[in-house]
Image (cartoon, rainbow over all chains, first blue to last red; front, side, top):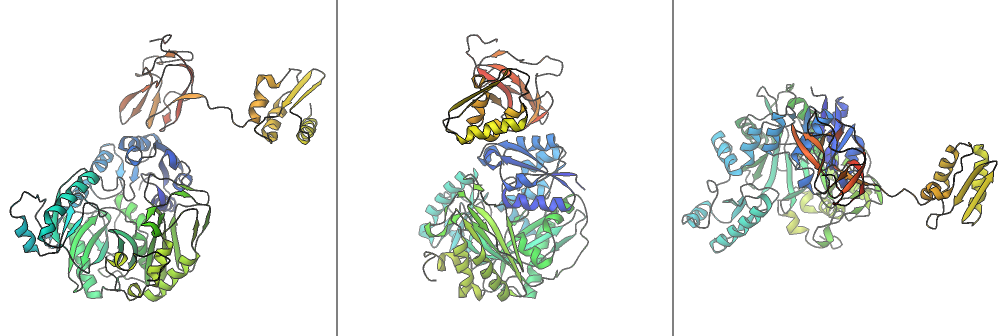
Length: 454
Length: 162
């Protein structure tokens, strides 16, 4: 096992990882930017090293300074969290050459899943269903493109090869819009990822986003855990996640879980990861992508399985074995997570940085809050707006929704605008309560001011 | 002077709106000056005054100390800061003498130390012409981003020792 873990991240996930390390008896090193000097993860870690100024590109993405921080502090492993360097092949490679364990899968696995077109091909070969689409990047100069789009069937979606988080994506309803959409997506992708390659695929209407957490050891044992439904999204950013899905029955769960396992096996995956699927109303499912890291929403899986996925991730990265092996890992009850962001839902979700003047957290039973907030904390403007994850557990979905409504009503964050009012409205909405929300839910039902009805 | 006595004097000074009080007795000379900005300098002044041994040494506000503490923190000295994370070295090679010592005049852009990270030595560059007052980090110690490495005074390029 490792002795000292450097956490190359910030915010709630850095706090979450430090807690897991502490319970495992591992020393922790926080790295931070200058404006994060008073951040919670710095306060909780055994040691801290300032690695650069505010902009992520000079601090949390500054590989030389992070590796140096590991060297001067004597850390033997680095946990990358999510975002930042968590799916950066080069970083995993540098860690390896500096004899520091990267807590995650191999760099080859990251690479094979990171390139969306290559991942599709890998999945096709592994017998994991994929959405019909182009083989690799497309160009407006390609004469066969309109024919290909017709064959896939409109509407189609244009996506960035290097993409994620909704950037570089365009839905195309018919042929007249095709070329313009591709050009816009290419420009956007170039700007966001430095790679302008895009591809097209079938756009699935009324889709649900359902994903499977997998856990894998270095001996090749892969276990899939109960699914998470993450259909409540805004511009492809998840807002609410739950487990299990109100849509998935045990036979679909087994089918999808096995496909997720094949996906992980195809790239010799080790540690924890997530295979994301789009599921249509008929229950046909298609591989979207694999996230080769711990995810924001790992918490709901923890609540229904009782596992500590961050500890599992560290254990498995250190070469330990999975000591459970079952196809139908039981889900106990129902868990929901709400992401609370420093955004103003009344003004098109614009970021709302500021100082927390008062913080009142909701309490038990069945309530968990993962956050780095404290009263007096100033939210820097450089980073993402996630303030807290509110997670509830109940005996069934209905009980969990009622508990979430109660917890949201208790949660008070003063000093900044948050998405709490919006999340409450989702919980109160009959479409959500019936479990009939698709990925278009927010755009369709939540566009009006939070003060309005419905 | 007993600490209690000193506290009494301070208490008295605080209760008045006097701007300056000079205390002199048997060779002990203490002067208090109230800052125009801060109204409650009592705590830090107290601490400093009680540390002052009653050895007959004159101690006055003119040496700046009580007055300084009453305006809060002293102004931050000018420093050369680390721009990276790594191990700090006073010279660019183990067998060489330090690149700069106390009093060295350096020109803007002149290397003053080195930081080793990932087996690579990088020079620490003086961002402007200055005179080294003192080194703040010992040779071979780890440094973080933004950590002050040298205290310096402004200097001109002309008299730099290049």
